Image 1 (cartoon, rainbow, N blue to C red):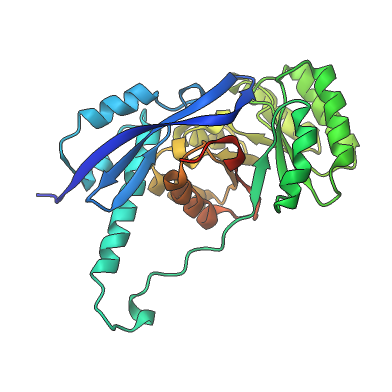
Image 2 (image 1 turned 90 degrees about the horizontal axis):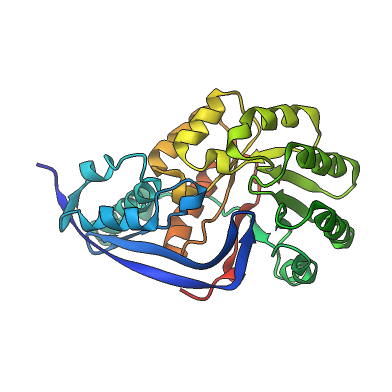
Length: 320
């Protein structure tokens, strides 16, 4: 019979210091669940239902129906329609095993024989700018903090207004800066062509345009990726591992934005990325430090191109 691990959980709420504005709406509070296995293994369930994961209530219902002890088999059989739960439980299991391995090491043993391998080198961080004109007032402070890659939300206001701000922003950013534009699927086909054409023409270092069109317009994004120099990255289209696999099978060989916290099973995600050597950019779901560390570990393992990871978001949330 499989060994059981003591399981408990609690929910949390964190307020955004400045509401996050995207084309999906305004986000004011981050809610999630912290889980613990075996007394020492912590994981985080941080769903974003409007992005493709389960709802918080579905995650809570799943946790409530579990027994006081869970097995490894139960964890690896969490269904794919609960991707944030898959991530949280596998992360907690990994953390628990790591702590227990440390405790079971012989004292005064040879470190070269018993120590865990050194973790991969950390990836550079990209910082999220606020939508609209507020970006013009914040990038410089973040630059002084060491950020060199910035992400700016578009598709929130009228395109004419955003293009004016974009011109000012690209003129003010230093030549060494990289800028990512994130539309969250909020552009029309003509607007996406307009943005890509302008990005192709300017000298500023635009790294990519992220998810210009809605998920159901995959073929149009594939076409656009072939007709413009500016790279396109899929985000909402590849929110979960199942979606990521589907887009890859449909021929996408561009950039994949992966949010580990809602992607699903970390072990299966690792296997897919290593097998296909995809160009991945890893990004936050506004998790706490618990989920962040598990996600960054995956990012450090699987980032092939040393692209900055989208975890420069602490200035948006109150302390956990």
